[in-house]
Amino acid sequence: MNTWVEILSRRKWAFVIALLAFLGLGGRCSNDAVEMGLIWEDDFEGPAGSLPDPTKWRFDIGTDWGNAQLEYDTDRPENVSLDGQGHLAIIARKENYRGRQYTSGRINTRDLFEHTYGRFEARIRLPIGKGIWPAFWLLGANFDEVGWPECGEIDIMEYRGQEPHIVLGSIHGPGYSGGNALGNRFRLSQGTFNDDFHVFAIEWNPSSITWYVDGVAYQTLETRDLPDGARWVFDHPFFIILNVAVGGHFVGPPDSTTAFPQTMLVDWVRVYGGT
Image (cartoon, rainbow, N blue to C red; front, side, top):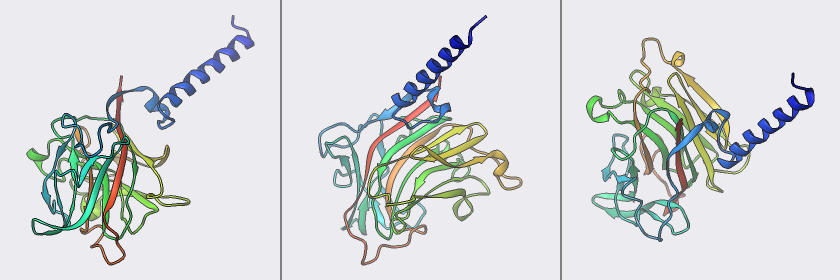
């Protein structure tokens, strides 16, 4: 029979082990995430001006993307490159380029990394200004076969530059997309998201998705939260997208108060999966 001293000692060491695991992940993960293993990451190490790792990222080149955006997204280092200090910089510029007045960047992991379930997170410092629309999001890898929103979309973080203290997290699917997407807002108690880096994350399992900012869970959406007759389409691989849009339905156009260039700095992106 164990003595109370032995029992308490075991509990103490169990707590220490759990705490060390938590701290080993940078204090970012929930208890569930501690049980996951790191399966994909990019820390954006490399010389200043170099493009992101082509084994991990590909470029979307073009304009609009269905949201009436004003920028032309390029694969130029002027718009997407490493800063030499361990960050990825996605830079929106005011310049005439291929019939557009703005340029920016949009990169994704399509066909390079696609995954179902787990914890997806990134540490990001956001830009600021009316009409600036950065996002960290996931899109269903079956997009070509079924189209949007049937493929599903998970917005881990999107943000209006004119509301620099608020980010949004949402899901889009058949019957709950666009202006009818399901989601919620997270408001900083002080400061703005362009002041410093913040960690944006989701934890996704077969029946629910939970959103986090700096380790604080601010919403969970479950299958039962869908509109009557709607389907949960978050049961297959998704890929990662990082971008900074200029203008569009969600944010409106820039105005005279918007300074350019505007930069989203990404410190790292990590994905944890079940072991």
